[in-house]
Image 1 (cartoon, rainbow, N blue to C red):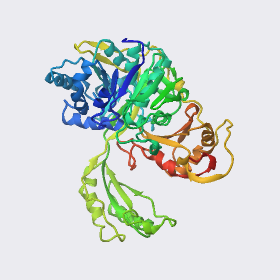
Image 2: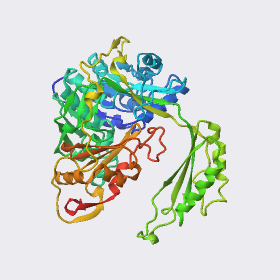
Image 3: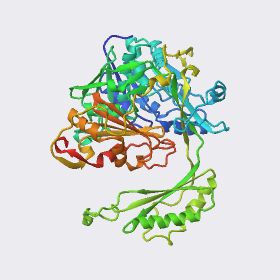
Image 4: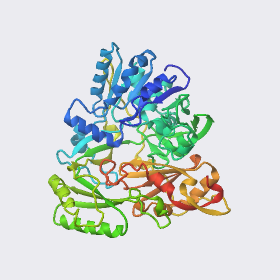
Length: 598
């Protein structure tokens, strides 16, 4: 344990492909004790799986070494610890690459490696011990067909990181740990926390959740982005975590972007469900979090309550999917509905009797009568017809698919043209979210001297049934009384009162909405029922929607089950990760007290 002051933990990556210079920026921009990097979105595991299939020596995130090289010597000289999940599917491979890079630079980094998340080879034995890996959404058991599973990775916790840092590691290479665990491990090591100090651990989870996606905590992907003075290159976030688990979210002085209650709230409601946020080491009560703007770019995060973790942890499985192909055609001018119907009828006739499933999607907004048509050119007035074909037989959706559609070019609706030439079919990766008992994991830490140490289980775990998300609110108005501002009501976009951030969790989507004061929150609670949400989001009308309140954040979170059927790697939705769902919702017109309109 270095010392009792708060530990300054920076983030240098929110995904595989984030800003390469971020590590250099956070290391050179001011004092930091630990730098974490999150590279493993759900879709990333599929990408790394393809890398590993082509070359067994690959499967890790290669860009981390590129980030590290310019500052490798500085990091070691200043004793800045690095904790990253860039190990992906091959953490030992990344460790080897980092050691080789260090040797080439005459450096001797102490690199520790965490493993135990990869269950692909263990699935048969785990099945034999009554683990049937039910799908989160369907409840179906995982198929046993050979070759069906591409990758299978459990979400690990933070204590392997703690053990590595306590033993003197400079760099901890992690595989699929939970995003927040990178920060929890660093904070628990620094402060010497015990494994059952639930509130402290929960505070670190909350801070970790805020900074894990990089610049999304400093103004990126922020619905009130017009209020941020400079978003050219937002600085990456820093969490100053105190011994009691409270924290201050900030960034280096002089960097672009901002850290405000709004930007922090946006990240807290991103990709979450109900009030209980489950992690392998602790369950964090999101509804207990309190925020306060202390100063420019400094937001206090405190009051976080923790509970024992669940006895299971999530497993993300990527698997064999169907073959897919698609083409997009323009729809312009009058009779757009009839044009689509004509093309759809001809396409279905061309594929009649073939083992092909066809999906037709209209993209783009129609030109409304009240629109000033004189200011709209043809490109702006164009809508698009997306035609998607899927099949278990690659040949059915390769050349025959494109040829069948191109044959309609001169015999279908007026103004038809394709946005691109036909392409080859591709195999869509399936996504199978499930759980495994934590007691079934074999988590191991390989120290820099190649000594292997086991990572033990949490001291207390609860069955998932005891960690229910609480009473789900009815679909009408909430149970408790609220005071809604009176006065004149006006028609205005929902976004004139609320901010939003949306995202994906497997096949589900979440939309977190929040306001800036109690009066607006009272209106939001009363106005935006589940039924009203379904009216504003027609795509959710036939789906199960859950609503949760986070009063201390002035926030409401909606979880839309099955919107992204198949998850980001397999969904047919244009917005694969529901990134823009919240912005679409904010654009919808509602009746709102005039006094609340911003």
